[in-house]
Image (spheres, rainbow, N blue to C red):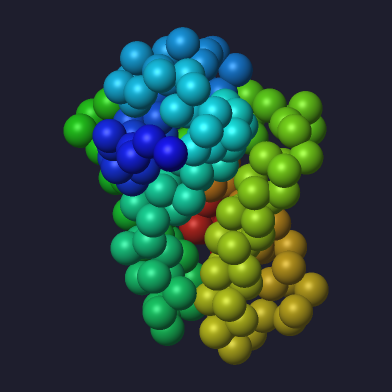
Length: 187
């Protein structure tokens, strides 16, 4: 007879996401996940398969947290100004409660680079591609831009959002706002 779970997966994944966000993927052990999630190793493996499985579920929860600002950018009809507003919203999100955590996805990309396991690499790249697509859609709203320029600027903005995320962990608000303003003088 199968045992019933004494926990809600949504609750324990939220806790795991916070742990990964604070410590990074590599520094987070299964023992740490057990303690943070309040469930044993057997339950972790039974529900999620592995540490990697827990992290993949954490990315889904993280994306849901970002939905509000992603939807604002998706629904924007202000071209470059919509992207600039996204950068400011993203900055507030990364500095939530002045914890300066950066972005979970950007932190993981920076930490693991191409060393990430294939299924994790796919999920991280899917997330970054979704953001890039939103940038492309907003840049296309600008009448004076060729498709070649739109592509270049979307690539530039992807690199800039990574820089903003990493910078948000160590720089003060004025420095980060200066970064955003300077970035958008180039677009």
